[in-house]
Image 1 (spheres, rainbow, N blue to C red):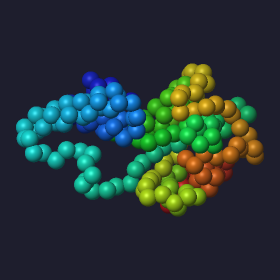
Image 2: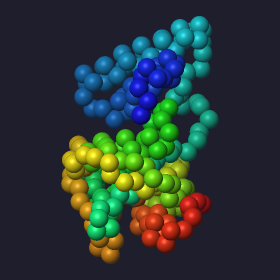
Image 3: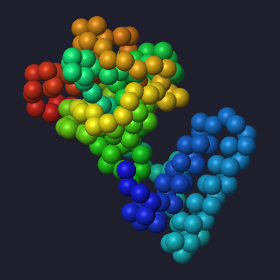
Length: 205
């Protein structure tokens, strides 16, 4: 992940604006919402000053051109060739580490960051396994258009420690995987696993 000092100022302000909008969408705490509103206004004013116009089109408005969301998932194996999975607090099912990509980060940077946040492990992203259009694999109806990128990674350092989104972490043999979370499906997971097991080329829709 790039440090703020490595980012362009307008990228930094745009990221602050995105964080404030995410906070306004998901936070329930009235004090936090008040702070996110203030943060959003500060970011908007900074962007207007940067571009020296009060009427500039700001990012992350509802009238922008709609594009698919992008998420990442990471396969990590131990010495027994077991797969690391976390139990999601949201629905009790299991998924490999991952989540939405953030602004001004590459997909691999976002993947490594998600692993660190959810598992406490610092990893090296080794390769892309597959790029999938998720609505072809979901087992439920959703209006969200999403691309997901699966990576394989190796652990450099750290100890397993789940965050607030994850109830528990563990390594599972491939022939005895736990019930999956709605955040992923067996079909997409096995598309990624097939690339690892059979050493095939990157799979994409």
